Length: 639
Image 1 (cartoon, rainbow, N blue to C red):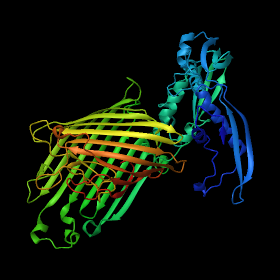
Image 2 (cartoon, rainbow, N blue to C red; image 1 turned 90 degrees about the vertical axis):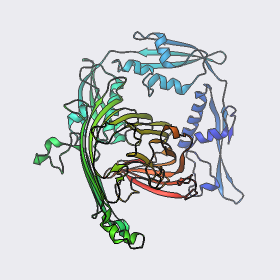
Image 3 (cartoon, rainbow, N blue to C red; image 1 turned 180 degrees about the vertical axis):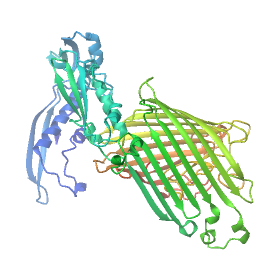
Image 4 (cartoon, helix red, strand yellow; image 1 turned 60 degrees about the vertical axis):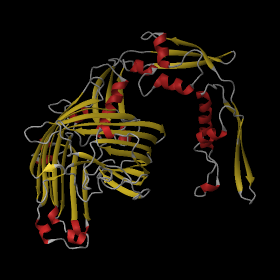
């Protein structure tokens, strides 16, 4: 029972006291017992709610605990406390003492409180000691070498409802970084860690450089995220005579290599499906021929090497190899090489039992086979302007398509025979999401343009893509995510593009094999694979040249440990494809809702499961499967 609260409702106060629960009938699975320490801690939080709203003198007058028996004779406990809110205080004056580096106005601007404004204890503490943006008073000094800076606030009540804020400052001397040590990196080599650090021996001490260094190490995903931001993550050894501070980064290695193995039965039509893939995220190609470095593989130089193969009898085979060096010639300029091969033999599919009916003799002799060979090289650059979060990347790719069909002149917009494509892609991205795995705040944006010029009779197109993601932390492990994807593919001549168009629906594991010939698949929860598309006059799917997709999620980081991390969520998705800008209708979208969860396992990487319900029929003009629920599953990526 709460007495004396007028400015804040009892319901809001009880929500603030989340560790002290009332014994309600629906909490039959857990009985709440009285704990004096938790109760006192909850009362402190309640008083903090008032001081954040200007009630500087708010306090608990008294609290009482009663033991009673309910109607059924069961013992219970009733807690009652009386609040005295007091008046709402405003700031009358702000004084600074001991400052020589910054003026009073500069410090007051960083403080973020003005004369006549209501007192706010939370803002006062944050703006004095640390804000996410690094614009607080302490950061002004500690980012310029004054690592021993101290500020002692004094709050004076004056007659009426006013407060005087007086701050006594100790600025101290300017310190520089001394030795920079690294501990705990049993696998990752020192040079891989050091190239990510902004703390350089001899440079002026800066707290922001320490924070930026931790953020960069976090992006590597080689080290335990919790320990990386723990109290013991950075060790300091201060030498007051030399005015230096030695820094030690205390790291804890985690496994980042991933193994993907799956097998399944695609029915009598497809047969046995096998897939095997390995990704080494901290590889060392320099030590490939060093027998002593194979423990069990050469590692520690921060390179990525991936190999994957997939087969489904004689009907489908694929393979890919890729390598990425994130620091080319000692600078943050990632280069990458990849090669892939895909072959599809539709004659090997046993259609006679697929429909339960025999097929014609002459149909089995028709050739229905197509294959692709591709190679790509990429080069990236980390930019310093407008800020260090910007990156640019360039890629040059070659693809060769072999369409070996009889009885038709084209397949997915490509004529029968050999078709070739050379494309150049340029992208610009900015990513401030944090932390690296299961981010809860920040944003990302990627703008890319791909051009395949009409060289001879090569495939030609121009493709534009913009993706963005915005994260808002709410409270505790709860956060909100909003994403958007806008894509368009057009022609460089008068011909309408009919190859590489967009089809929406399903997830990465919905297909029996990695069949993406002639289309660009965009996954959408709650819908079957590639059901949101456009159709040709003969009823076959072709896709749209314009894509809109939106995704929102309410996420909860439920479990975080070195063994695995769990993040359940609820989602709302919407997407559609259009036949160019003339047919674009932003409000005409296929929507879905549902629940899901992501689990990060060191050996497998990211595993995601969702259960979505489509809100719109996915065949226009019908109600086919409207409102049906559909489970989906993926390894290594998001929907």
